[in-house]
Image (tube, rainbow, N blue to C red; front, side, top):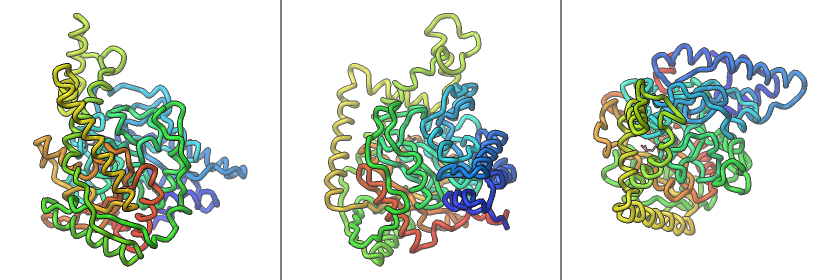
Length: 493
Ligand code: GLN
């Protein structure tokens, strides 16, 4: 039995008090990665030597009586679209196979300044486009609850790594659900902060009006700790918000008495898996017993979310990904030097996968002269409707409770039709469109063909409402034990 604590805050407390060394913590997790990751495939790249020297530096600071910070010695993994100076950042794409980050992302800098130890980078869908991590060009990530099932996506490697205990916490990015959906599939806590809460500097852009970086953790209290480290205005990202810092543990421990929780009727659709609707109802009972005022509300724009996202996301992506042209960034196809046109088209056809090409084509189409108003302008109007409905609802309730995803994890290859994959994001995309925040937390398991697979609920809050949603999540996790369930694969090791 290991003596290394499981949560980030316990690890940091033990390291700061000298109870355990940062080097021992790093070795423990590197050992788990060595034992389990050949099978799971969470990591694109493990930086063991760098991690060891970062940990040794933390121990040296402590030996000199200095405080390394709130994440002292806490191992963290980063999604492979977040830059770490001198390390590769492939974004799961062949086109960036040999790209080395020239600088640290702001989140990378904030983590290291807080004493964290970076273990490596985790696999994701190519350019964060997907819901299963099947679109990663470099290999499969398996769900620790059952390796025949996907871990969700696009931040599947980060979610599976936390679920399997390969790392106590990890970062992902969420443009339409890519933190919350894999958190749901892997049975961990995943927070999508408010748009602008965390700097995007050094995150490879997919759709910047919706992209947000956030943490995967074992529980809501760790998410609150990580958010305190990550959040803040950044001169490098002019969409980052100048706002009051999140309140951390003090804010989430406040009792829930009188908290107004609304369950949108549209989120309890008969098309959802029955276990998921049951989990939402059970959570409603837990919240009632904690003194909350739980009511049924409406989010009539729910069904517009995926359609709106499928115009805005590709439109922004097609323009952002234009920089990967075989000249300034990324690989150039061999012999593609005849003329500019051929260099672009051969390099991009060779370097970009099918899903990314689909989005670039869709985005180029909806932005083209004859179709701009019919698609892009119209989607912006729908965005306004979704935004305004959220804003109105948050005058009536403090938190929206519902499912994170309509169904439990699926098997590899189950969603070969892209549209059916996009519909997995039905309950998550609207928060990205509206710029609000949400957290996915484990809410039990369900039996699918003899496998026990995680079920998740989502708590959504208004702009800068992270303290409230994390407070609601934290009290749920005090009242129930769902977040402590471990996947069978790792319980035996
Ligand atoms: N699954 C969604 C997509 O395919 C969301 C991705 C994300 O949030 N990065 O675009």
